[in-house]
Image 1 (cartoon, rainbow, N blue to C red):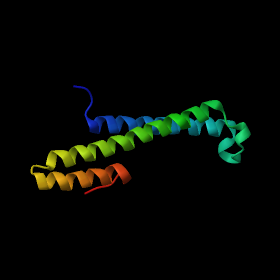
Image 2 (tube, rainbow, N blue to C red):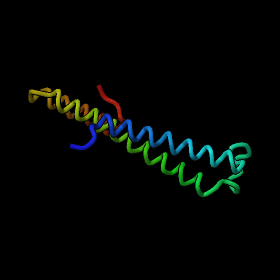
Image 3 (cartoon, rainbow, N blue to C red):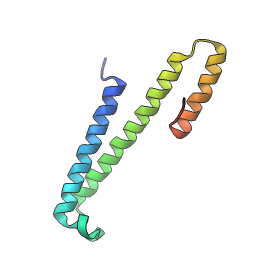
Image 4 (cartoon, helix red, strand yellow):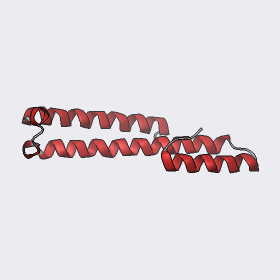
Length: 98
């Protein structure tokens, strides 16, 4: 099988960090980091910032999936399944759950 959920999350978090780092380098080089003048921000910086956002979103989604998987695996009876579905709904809505 491919990557585990945890490895995928780690990969996405590392990729987000790398893209943010590249974005910062481009912003520093162009002077945007100091001036915040959007007219001098480079296409490369914008691209790296966008990619970082994508990886952050993937990581957040995988955290939700991981939590849902844990909830499903922990439920063994009909009553616990009902509780589990409520927990899953909460995870999907706000990314949290017990």
